[in-house]
Image 1 (cartoon, rainbow, N blue to C red):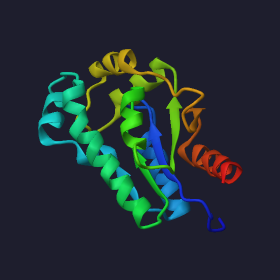
Image 2 (cartoon, rainbow, N blue to C red):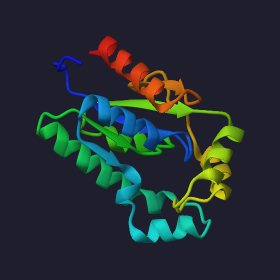
Image 3 (cartoon, rainbow, N blue to C red):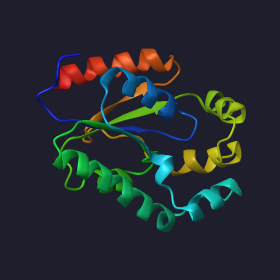
Image 4 (cartoon, one colour):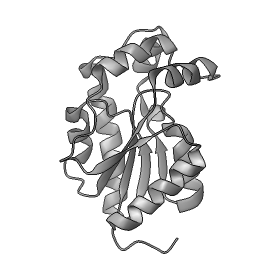
Length: 173
């Protein structure tokens, strides 16, 4: 892909099991942009809480969101396009990620609840139990038309989704 003139801080968002990590891998392989798995920067207390089947509160999420926003800001200051996964379930969370970061562009990955639940149950080695899916769906505020980004059905393979996102980035750039 030709080098883009416009910076992009791509945020793959959606509930657990929507495919964010898989699409991140496919995009990172194609674009060679710095990438961050948002789950990797959760404080240990958040991971322990989720592993115990306890939903996070806003207070739990703010430091995590600020850490991701800081990472985005570092990439933008270095003039590097980047990719990050973050559930970004609420508009206020997305606003935190965008504050001072003009190049953020969201891709909201969506799939039927039954598909996501099956994916979560089949995952190996992830701390997030399928029992928390309902709380995430209840918290979710879908991406709004005035927010930069798009919504994609996450039922295709990660490679197909990555190609679609790259096509959309070319149109946006």
